[in-house]
Image (tube, rainbow, N blue to C red; front, side, top):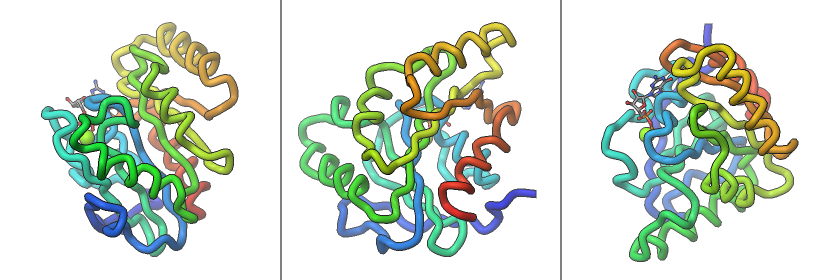
Length: 192
Ligand SMILES: Nc1nc2c(ncn2[C@@H]2O[C@H](COP(=O)(O)OP(=O)(O)O)[C@@H](O)[C@H]2O)c(=O)[nH]1
Ligand SMILES: [Mg+2]
């Protein structure tokens, strides 16, 4: 039984003015292209193809908002932070990131990190982006590609790199590993 049974797409925002009303609670999901972010969102919300999984990474820079329950949202951040954004997109993208960060309803950030790759520069940029009141939870994705020993080593390495700035867990959308744990974290943030 999932807690998130009523998930629906709310809106795609290409500009801060298109954001839904800043009330209730929301959690953002971010990670570099192809890391398994859409698959993670789908597994956690138990909604097939809610966030499209795609093999053409980083095409559109829209913030996609989904509603899990009334006033309870997740926000899918495309691609990554500031560094990877082409110059012509910065004019709209940077204010969107700033607008999201300043929202009253933002509770925290899920950062999806490839378990084989570990915490990298782009992830550090996201950790620097959040504000002190925000939670951060890292999903070490595609953990099915690691054996038990490698998984434990990846978890320990991530814990070391994060040094208390975020909680972290192993995750596999493919095998269902850690889905329940991630749901519990999300539910606690959003109060559902
Ligand atoms: N082995 C494995 N592959 C995965 C997993 N999650 C996603 N993938 C694959 O990784 C690729 C990118 O997934 P997607 O969810 O679209 O990533 P996104 O670009 O971060 O949204 C796709 O080929 C997925 O099938 C997982 O848990 N295990
Ligand atoms: Mg995606």
